[in-house]
Image 1: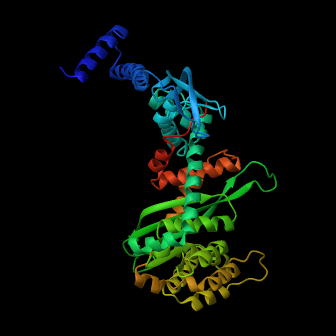
Image 2: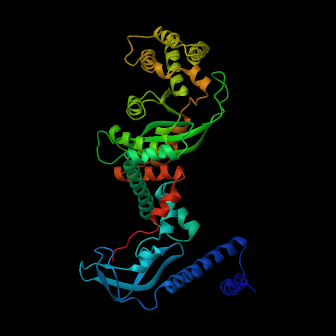
Image 3: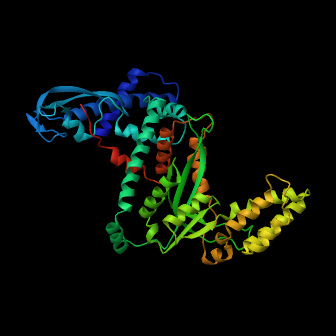
Amino acid sequence: MDNITKIGQLLLETLAERVSHPDDFGHMEQELRQLLQECGREGLSQWVQSLTPTYPEDHTDCPYCKQEADYIRWRQGNIRSLQGNMSYQRPYYLCVYCHRGHYPFDNELGLRPNRMSAEMERLGGMVGVQIPFGQGSNIFEELTLVGLSDQSLDKASQAYGIEMATVEEEWAIESQNIAKIQRRRQTERPPVRLYGSMDATKIHIHGDEKDPWRDLKIGAWFEASGRPPTKPDGEWRIQAENISYYADICESKEFSSLLWSTGVQRNANLARELVILGDGAEWIWNLVKSNFPKAVQIIDWFHACEYLMPVAKAAFQDKKQQQAWVNNVKGSLWEGELDDVIAACQTHVNPELEEDPAQKAVTYFQNNRDRMDYPFYRKQGYHIGSGTIESAAKQIGTQRMKVSGAIWNEDSARNVAKARAAYLSGQWSMLAERRAHLPTIA
């Protein structure tokens, strides 16, 4: 009989003692989960304790000053694990030179006394970047049978955001290392075609009562497969792939550094073709010019088209006339006939309107005409829609940061946004590995 079968029989005997007549299968599952939780806590505690040294060394190196630390005594540690709260004993050392204590065993195994374990933090953070902390706390306990407060979920999520910020700082240093960039140029295969895109969404922040909304800037790097349609209203078959996101609440100058460093990580500076998509926001194109001046700049097709219907509604009362005008001008835009597009909008400019949609459209198309050569872009097979970054703004901004009633501390908002961007980019495991062994202080 193997060990698993023996354990199963022991579980059956214990369950029979606890519940003689279960109500239904759901009741049986709940009772078994609870028992497994208790067994897991005991087993984990014994497993940890079995790894502690039977006879501690008299001395060990102090991790702070590198001098010799003396063994003092055994001390109890407590940790919040996925199996519940557990305690264990391990040797304590004190340095006679810097007078700081430490637990070599904790550092060796990645134990975090009086805190949530690395695995609990990993899962708690995953929940916290998906849904509001209050809801997440209830769901976490339902799924794991371990209570984790909304404050703890917040702390776990922020911890991953702070770790991501640290990674980005490391990337920033690497991105200025000319020798390293040259080595990558020689050893790595550059992307044939890489896309980038940026956008911003408003986040409600504590503090300034006059202007409580701050820009959460979001960027994305991605590749794409498929081709655009052959006509303006055709079916789009282009799909973004291998997407990585980045985000921050900062001025354009700081975001410029993040654009460059994340771009270097994706080899944007080495790409044979670098294509940047965006709306007409001036800050976006200023950053592109200063960081990737050779990139192909494209105004998102759908965003450009959004300027047409307001002009039609102001010019015509009949909906059929409105749609006919939009379709005609959109056709000109699709064919790259910008003079015709501008002229069509210019015809309906009304100087008496303070916010004239026609004049707004004229200014927009004039300022961005060099980014609207759609026939050339289609011929090259370029992606001309910024749906990827709009999706990022929704997933990071709207779905998580702008939930009903959410008002953020700025640092908290920044950290959670960075953590969510990392999660959506498939970087959670990398961050978890970095956080698996945090130094402990006695």
